[in-house]
Image (cartoon, rainbow, N blue to C red):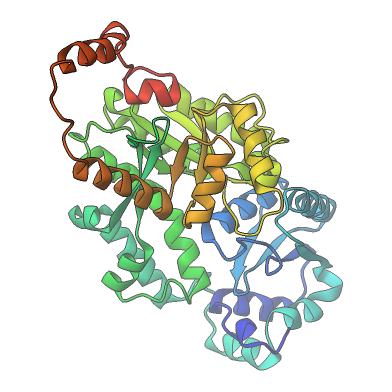
Length: 420
């Protein structure tokens, strides 16, 4: 591990810090966490959530946090925090295993005794020596910091709309007339990478810092560029953004009437990692007028999903090809949450769409759902007009009367049980 190319790619700040500790150990506790065995471990939004969870165990104690390639995480804290770091990591291992995310590995260190061994785990001695020789103890490389500031500039800029991609949640309650009921907004990482000429998918540190800013960028985009968009919209947020002191200002920049059409999607693992933070974030969002949905829900956890009493507008089940008993799990999800709340998410392939329909799922999001909706629309447009016979007026009246007697509720009302 110590000689890997990933270790050598660690930022200058952590190398300089470890070199200093190697030569002059301090009374610190260290936690080195390895996310490489975790599903989604290389997803910056996921790793950011895990980072905040581990840090939360330290309370108000000082800490130094370094994100390493791999992805890995190093936390340094006062020596008396060692039991908190270890218990927090052990709890996180259990939560991730319970939810089927894989095996997380971690090691705790007494820096006063093991500083040299800890340093060797992160980078080879020559890399530490070079960092020490530069005699700068910056937490992040200057060049990388400049790149992050450039990302911040773009996310503040007027052209962010060109970076935003839309994906529709479709209702197939009437299979012959699929309807769009929600539009999710997300920043295209490929477009952002190309626009800035940045290696976001190759630079774990940079990618992480960029993702930490996307929540705020999307909020500003909605406030500035979507004021005349009458559709129900959704954006991804994470609890750290919502619980930040600045979030209220971001939210209040969006008119209250529009906030009532906006759904904030929180990842389900945030509830598993810290139910208190999840509930606090959901409560704050509701107080500000947002609907709250939960996404990234593995099919296998639909039956046991615990959201700490939070009433969510939608539950987005993550389709993973090859999941055992997928139809039965989806059927159970429909029974528990109802067909107006369960969304089959990342429905990218026709077999996923077909399995969902057989299980009673009505709401879908993904390329396969888009294709099915387009296919139905094409069939409707190509259908020949009905022959007009003498009996047609009477038949038409009989067919349309129930529709006239029972006006159809708005799309949002039918999906979320809320006003249109």
